[in-house]
Image (cartoon, rainbow, N blue to C red; front, side, top):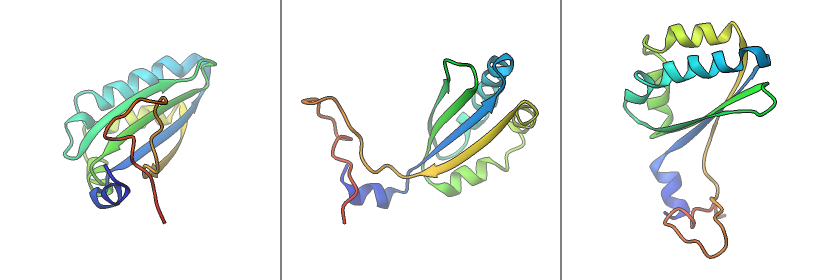
Length: 121
């Protein structure tokens, strides 16, 4: 995929870093799993999501790919995941951000169709 295709296809990555007390980290993981599995994952434009937890117990991070920002915003209007997300807000703070892929790095010698993604001037 060439850089111009990245800009043209509009795929966005949402990275949401949540801060939580270590005692509540698993609870937050469970809430985000329930919100995503069975609701968000059925939304039009959803591509994938990966849920991470920090080893020190203070962070939970969701990395999600969407076809475009409009699909992501439409999903936010869906009442399905809302109860889980409201409860999550009672135990964690969230720092979401939308990103575009600039470049994917792979081990030397490993090629894939994504390895050529790079922003150019």
